[in-house]
Length: 545
Image 1: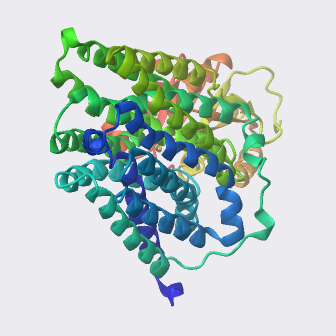
Image 2: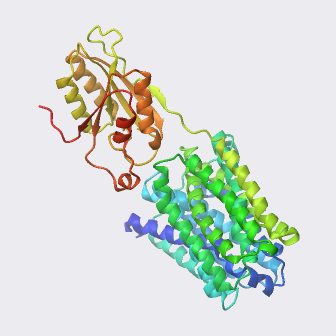
Image 3: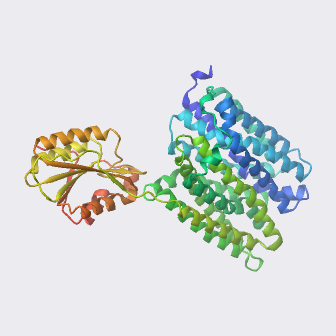
């Protein structure tokens, strides 16, 4: 019967359950001090709640793909949800910190099955491979992390046990929703992978660099998540409010801000810059956490700002990792998350231990050092450089010698007809040599006059070649690929200068996305201002006669 359920309902069920699953990360923040007092534990002992949780999560990441390919995605995520519900319920019954740490380990087991499968299932249900699914997944992560502290604070006001029981109930609801709304997923016998597959994937240099950078970045993440509540020394509700703001900032940046920044910069550049800001924030928190300079307001502000930065970095790390292994996102995800959450297992106990024995300023200083290491590692991930190719061999209809070319920018749309018609009617074969140029943008929004070239453009290009050669023109072509949105104008101008172009002909689109207008991102204007040669801009709606 669930086969008749709409794909949107199935996706919503997975997103809801994912949100509940991610609540477990920040759920304990408001009640860390209450747990320490209730179970007579030290901050270092309480930090083991994170260490045990993420250590099991990291190790289980290596086999989640094996489990999913044997029992199917739906059964895998349901198994994870059930395990989370059982161990969350058990966490609320703990009488000692050792018992609670043990239950959190089991929680981590279920979380690993759940988290690793959720993204793949969302991609499968939405039938999209790429950023839309990742951002939906990261939105669930952000909302879950934001709501977790809020629920932890509200329920934890009565007892530190109540948040665990509340999470168990919500996860059971998620379990039922998935069972009812999500259609059965096939067991893919032909896609089973060896246990060594994630380690083999880490031999890919870019994935290894991204994973290692995320490993060290997690020391900053958990300096905030696992240790800062002890530094703030506030009540349950107050800490819950702080981390609710932190989670809201994370959710907003992961879903709204990150796509805008990606239209101007490559993800590697954005991650690097965000990590530099995190270095500064850690130093600020270190200074104001010192007993002689303690000031709570700057600490709260820094925590909330860090949430915004985490939202950007988490999203881009995930996208970058999945792009390194496009044929198997599950393997790339398993490899990346294993290394990432291994850092999440080590960071809480190390950061808290140093703060407990040497002073909180040294915890944040260490986090700043690890953020610097993360910056250095991610900087080694090479940015793509524009590549020039020639899709079609040149057609020599006349003897043109070394006449300077007229560059005609193509974008694979109907506007190309306007440019070609103009060339046929107003340029002369004896006076002009034509170069058709296609610019393929790596990521981002549509630019004005230059858009991401579709694969079918080659067929159109052949037709244009024939039309122009029939009119007696010498015609050549170039495809410039791996161009970042912010580099489009510079690349066009630079190529025109290198070829000593006589004229640059481009079509100005009458439409532009809201995002383009907001960013004032106009390729046409930039090319016109920077070009060494005349630029002729033709409105896309013009008709040559």
